[in-house]
Length: 360
Ligand SMILES: *Cc1c(COP(=O)(O)O)cnc(C)c1O
Image (cartoon, rainbow, N blue to C red):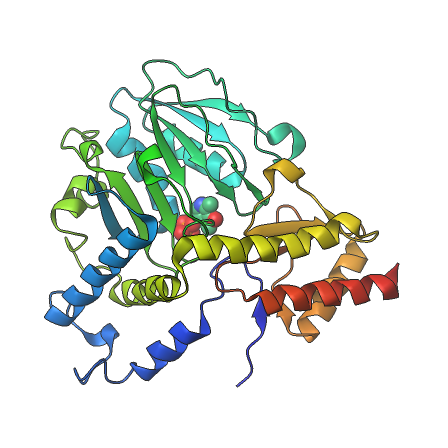
C-alpha cells in the first residue's frame, strides 16, 4: 500500500487511523455480522452511532443545549435554498459576496426573496475579505449570510461581520472543525463534510432552536424544513448512515488528539510553513492579502501557465497530488485540511524549494 499526500479541496484527505478502523469494521461491525452500510437506520447499533456522533461534536465545538445538530443530505448547495426557505420570514436578507459559494448562495436566495449584496470583494477577484464593520444592514433583514472560508480563493474571515443584531448564518464547509468557534455568535452554521470532516453526502447544520419554526415559506419542501428534521433527530427518512458513521470516527479522532484548540495549533503551524515559504519565494506567489489568508486552502501562482502545468505534473510524480488550482482561477492550490499531516506540508515546501532552484 502506498498513500500519497492529497491536497484536494474536496472530497479530501481523511485520517489514516479512521480509514483503517472503518476497514477493520467493514465486514463485521462490532459483532453484528454486517457492515454499517447494510444496517437499518432504525437499529440500536445505528442509533448508538448517530447519538455518539452528535454527543462528540457537541463536546468538540462546545455547542450549547439550545442548538440542534442535524446530519442532512443534499450538500452545502442544498442549504443555499433551505436557509432562505426557513429563515426569510420578511423575505429579505443580506449576503456578503466573497467568492463563488457566497454568490451561489445569494443567487439561490433571490428565488425566494430580496437578497441584498451587503459587500463584495469581486473588484479584486475575491483576494480579500471586505470590511464588515459597518454594513448597510436594514431592520427588515432576516439574517446576514457569509461564506466563512472561501475554498476556491483561499480567504477566511478573521473577524466576524458586525450584523447589527441580525442573525449570522455561516457556510463553514471548508473550515469546519479546523479551530474552536463560539457557536453562540451564530444563528446557523452549516458545513458539507467532504472538505474537512468526512465522505461526501453529509451536510451538518447547527441551528439555534428558536429558528426552527413552523412558519417557513409556504412552499418549502417537507425535507428542507428544519423542523421536520429536528423533530426526528435527522431520521425523518433514511440518512447517509455510512457517512455519519465516518464523521463520528473523525470526531473521536479529533477528541483523542486534543480537540479543536490542539487542532488549531497544528493547522496554524502547517499554514505558516507554506505561507512563510511563499512570502520569500521568487518563483511562487500567494494570491491572497495576508490579513485575509485561509488556514485551510492556500492558492498560489507562478504566473507562467506552462511552468505551472510542469509544477503540478512533477509534484504528482513526487506523491504530492491534486495541487491544480480551481478551474475558474487557475494556478495552484494546496488544501491543507485537518487530516493533512505536517509532514505533507514539509514535503510540499521541500519540493517547491527544489523546483524553484531548478526553474528560476
Ligand atoms: C464545496 C463547498 C460548497 C459546496 O458543497 P456541496 O456539498 O458540493 O454542495 C459550498 N460551500 C463551500 C464553502 C464549499 O467549499
